[in-house]
Every structure is written in structure tokens, then in C-alpha cells.
Length: 259
Image (tube, rainbow, N blue to C red; front, side, top):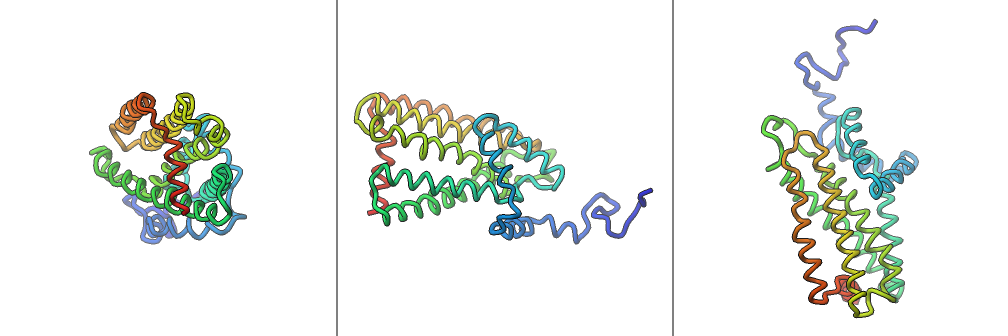
């Protein structure tokens, strides 16, 4: 028979965490645990991270159900295993090298492009977007009756990574097979195909971001995160009418970066 009280119980009489357990649940403690595991590859569950990457394309709702289970079992929404980030980094490196080959870059230019894409496009922009979404969701989307809850910054960063992965695969991998012979041909078919890739990729980013925040039960009005679809479709139609080629602009920007 289990004892009804215990000196080592994580819960105090009023249902609050005791001081030692509370210290383990602070943002700093969670961040330290995550970073400490970043270089311990044997402790990472790469199989599960690969499963998440697959379902981000086929059934992203299942990925966020797993975040809900983590909250129930580990008392945090954000990932505590950096395996997904490591696999995403590998994908980023491979796809960027492929982009460099398609654009006929030399070795050193390719390395420079890789550093730009990893540390600026992925990490830098990701930190900016995550912080912005973390602020907006906590400031405007948290339900009044649930103000004791808040969106973890780590969860906001995970949502960005989840949304960024399909965008990366579409624009930096699938699109590569069409760049030289279709997209960059300066024809209507070229910018139709290229801009459609952009529409799908950014649309995926918006949708998976919406799913991430709508999965949190203490947020309200998350449907507003779908509103960017309207200007996105409008911009897509305008680009076809005016002959804008987004992929051509991206390639020119990449070449300019590595000069």
C-alpha cells in the first residue's frame, strides 16, 4: 500500500511543486538539459525524429498530438530531445550543397552559402520568428481564464522547426530537379512552376504553424494565424500576372551572398 504522504513527493499539500522540483521545471533548467544532450547522439531518438519528419508531410496533427502527450508525461510542451534539430541540420547541409551544385558554385562559395543558410536563414530567422510568435501568443492569444499558463519559448521554436522542415524540402530539394530546365527558362511555365513551389512551401509553413498553436488548449482565436493565406494567394496571382520569378530572385540572391 502506497503511503499517503512523503517527504520526497514533488507536490506539496496545496498541489504546488516543491522548491526542488520547481527548479527542475524552470525554463533555464529545461534549456540546460536540452543543450546538454545536443552532443550526446547515443541518447537521441533519431528513429522517432524521422517519424515526425515523415508525418509533418502526411499527417502533421499526429506530430502535435505527441507534443500533448509530452506535456502530460514530462510537464513540458517543447521537445527535450534535440534529435529533430540534428536531423534538420543534416537535411539543411545536404540540400544547400545540392543547391550549390545546381548553381555551379565552387567549393568555398558553397561553404559560404552553407554558413549563411544555417546561421542566418535557419537559426537567425528562426530565433526572430519564434520570439515574435512567443510574444504575440502570450500577449494576445492566451485565454483570460487560463492566464496561469503560457507558451514556452522552446515550444515556439519547435513549431518553427516543424514548419520550416517541409518548406526546406520543397524549396531546397524537390525544386532543384526543375530549376535549370524549367524554372529559370524565363517563360510563363518557368515562373508558374517556380512560384507554385513557393506557394505550397509557404502555405505549408503557415498551416503547420497554425496547427502548432491551435494544439495548445489555453490559447484562443488561433485561426487568425491562417489569415496570411489571403495575401499569399494574392501575391501568387500578382506574380504570375507580372512575370515575377521568385526562384530566380532567390538564386540571384544566393550568388550575391557568396561573392
